[in-house]
Length: 114
Picture 1 (cartoon, helix red, strand yellow):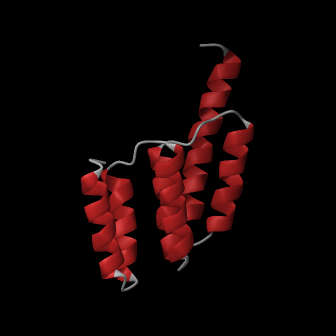
Picture 2: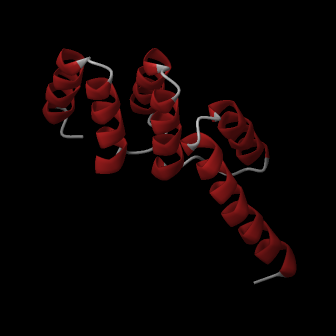
């Protein structure tokens, strides 16, 4: 591995750690800023990154934005949602009293075998 590739890998690991810290500590704006840095550096978002953003949006009481982000992930096929990402969506909706919306999402995701 070249020195440049090793430095990039270290930057990615540290960047993801800082991203997770910001997104999970109700500083989602910093999380999105770090995500923009990832894009500019050529890194593609993965299921963990997007799931962390969704969880962070719910932590900041931005339910509509979290649902829109999840919908964009599905529409644009950014990444394949895994159980953890789906859990963040369902958990966030239920904790904000949107149980019927959570149930609708479960039914919708089951119908497309997500």
